[in-house]
Image 1 (cartoon, rainbow, N blue to C red):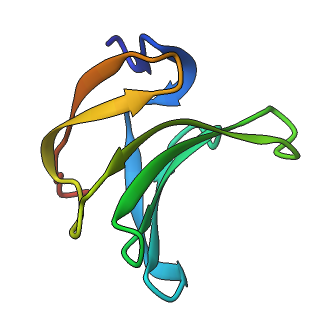
Image 2 (image 1 turned 180 degrees about the vertical axis):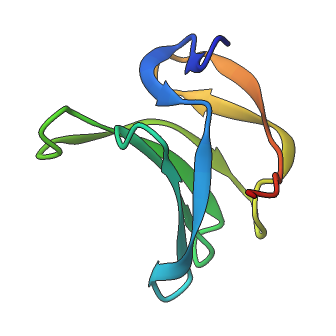
Length: 96
């Protein structure tokens, strides 16, 4: 993927987990470029890939993974709004 998602060039390949929850039952993996996040909502069992424009005033849901009641670690098939499905692997990495 050369550092970008082939379906949307604004989607990062590197994310860091933000330890504080956004709201109750909602968690975020923040993209390194700041132009995309992966947001999880445990009350709906859904994870969304959210992209932002360069001024952060417009966000767009690029893709999602549903029926997930835990963190989406490992390989899962995500559905994108282009109608394509793509396996994406999320790996835990120790930051030193």
